[in-house]
Image 1 (cartoon, rainbow over the protein chains, first blue to last red):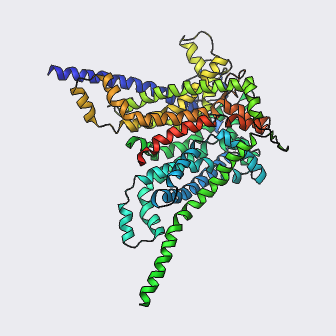
Image 2: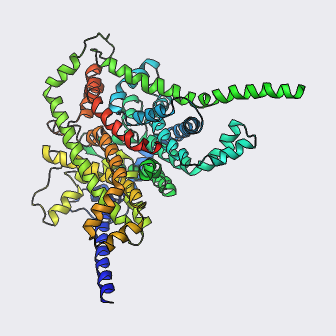
Image 3: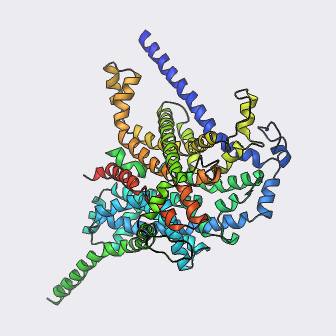
Length: 283
Length: 302
């Protein structure tokens, strides 16, 4: 009896500790997000008060109005949506085929290719951005969305290949063997039998590819001069001009651009890192 | 008889088709990688051996760029800063990430919700998180200084981004804020594979909480922790946005890192050879790190 109670008390102590640490983590993680919302709803005069107000005294949508009607933000957001959607869809389609070839067929050099995927994934962008810039200028595709769309797969493909190979390997081969015996052709086998089995993995890889394009800053800032083709990360950075900061519209734009990502993540947060770490967890 | 023969022909066709089928599947990705990754990579190494500038003709100058760089005090400083930034940030991210994972794996209520909320800093666009922190660090109207002076923790405003020491502290804070959840979620996935039997038998053997952590928890998450740490190290080493958008490498080059140095030399001064050489120089380190990563991830294939 006594022992049991003692144990429970100790457990509770640990639990209290966990809650305390959790609260600290939550404040550290979420305060900046809250501050973004807070600032975006304030008037300029309230923003620069000596003691910042933790709840806006008066909720104003002025920042949103300015952002949406007086800047090129809507255009930049549209560019980002188009670019991220097209690049991630095209990436995922071709990577599904390639990852299938590497994990499910007797193609030569499979292990070399798996290794190559990792190298390309972790290859520093700082090494690639200048050659890619020169290449884009020579091809005449810099300063266009098409050019960015051609460059973005340099980071989405290695990522998607890595994730998809990891997912595809977790599916047992028995199902396909059964289908083969039934006289199923290779395309049919792949599209009708295999891909439906790995839909969750494909969806979360697609979401993350979208996020990678959505967040991209370096290539966009190098390649694009014309404000017609800017994506939102570069467009927003131009709201910070010298010492004049348009904080409220900047925070409003930041918040708006988080929304698609947060929706996508809440749909599929569980799978996001599992493919990534699958190998080492099971090892 | 006829029937049998036609069967054989179609079979043979099928076999050759089966042989080229995988190559058909891989061809688009393979070609893309050749043109946009392998070629630029080799081209980059080539450029680093020339004095290529914008528009001008490039002539071969051997390893001259590398020698010039190593004599450049600003570059040497940026190497030291990169190491400092990487080691401190990764260290903090591992410690906080582990703590995060342990908390999320304990028997608290609302774990799923907490997990989702703690992942937010990692999910929001990098640039967005940088703007928010830049605003919170700001001298005029910045909330961090207001909170610190009001609660009496500091008597004077902290010049977050404009003094050398605090600029480094600031970029580390933002990097840790963004990156800790990744380690946290990775380690959590490792923790969830540990069976409770292990802990129970450890308890029977009289192991305390610390002993359990060292002898049961750590060995079980060793692989996933190593992998997440290595990948994070590579990412942090190559980080560009956080530094560029917060401090532009300043003040007085106190936060100048290899990536910002390379960007300034290449895009702003158009000295392509020097800029690429600055990143190629660290390729051996990256390759060693990637080799260790492949060791961990491809192990399962044995």
